[in-house]
Image 1: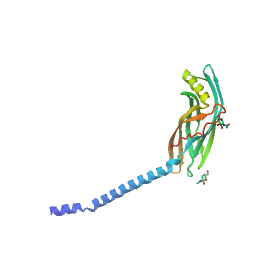
Image 2: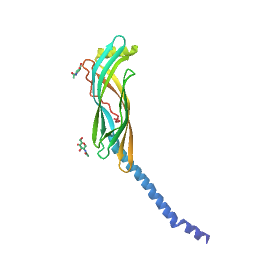
Image 3: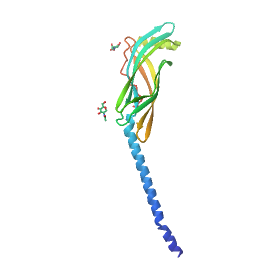
Image 4: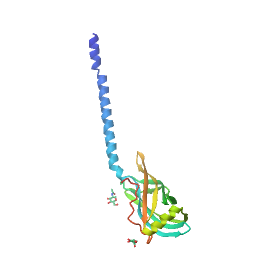
Length: 199
Ligand SMILES: *[C@@H]1O[C@H](CO)[C@@H](O)[C@H](O)[C@H]1NC(C)=O
Ligand SMILES: *[C@@H]1O[C@H](CO)[C@@H](O)[C@H](O)[C@H]1NC(C)=O
């Protein structure tokens, strides 16, 4: 009598049912994880990004007293390669600096980039009387001698895709690179490879 009851319990259809449900749920979780992961790998190289497409030094003035002034034009391209979703960029903030001294901040308020398109943001940095420390002056001297001057461009941007029912997908991009110019004619040394997209 007792044994029968035990046997009966072991083969309880409720237990089987729960076991099957658990197995299905586990498989569903694994498959969903794989789909999300593969989707991420496919989409990742195409997240909204910003990059420098053009840079030119219009002017470089340097005074023996340790003051520098410069004018630099920079074009930042905001790209949205997604053919299915509009992208909204916000909190674009980049600092241009020379030898550790911040010269200018390039910013942009929220703006939209339609599906599969891009937007060029032209900036013109005009700075007067940047006071240089002695090592900054040495750096300018050395730059003029070797006909190559370098500026740092560094900062962040936020972007998000508006996706129908899901709401939005948010991204955060970071860019840090150097812009090199010929002081003699202001051309940028090489087409700058500055992008928030991880290489
Ligand atoms: C996206 O734009 C490129 C050119 O910029 C074009 O060749 C391509 O067909 C477009 N893709 C879609 C899905 O519209
Ligand atoms: C600027 O000067 C550099 C070297 O001094 C030269 O290689 C480059 O071609 C010049 N660029 C232009 C646009 O003249």
